[in-house]
Image 1: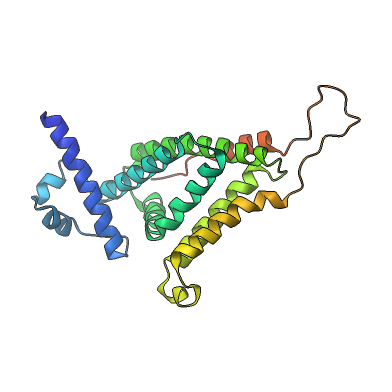
Image 2: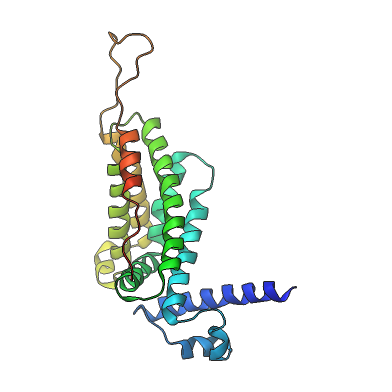
Length: 233
């Protein structure tokens, strides 16, 4: 194995262990000393991979976003894609909430991370394009009049809300088993578009006329136009 490959492999291990320590801490922060001790590495070795703790945290977020992109590339049916998008938020509720909090903090206070933030947003834009296409195809398969934009917003809202419930030990006393709640939320998200009346083409419409749109194209363009990076220092 080349030294370059060894370097990459070690970097992947550092990111994985750092993410696990973050999740275990539950506070969105760890020390490089504790990370080096866990990895049995010199602290100076960490700085060969990351110039600062903020860079390490942002690289963890980028890695997570790459994993989400890989999930969106699976070429199965649209319904499965929607279910997978929702389940990923619900199976890892603590991670979804914690990484979002860290990203907000870094975006508002970190310095010198513009290039990495640009990389993050580029990956996220590509993932969003795929999600827009998946949700649009699912809506079209149901002949639903719900817009793609509204459906994506619903998925995110229910996914984040569900993640919050699943991550709360207090509410678990009243909600019961986590797996049944996950199933109920995914099923509800899949059923929501069915509550919108199906598009029916008028029998008086001229031959070759297009049926009324469910605003998918408009939603696609509007949703993509909103995927511009936030300002970071």
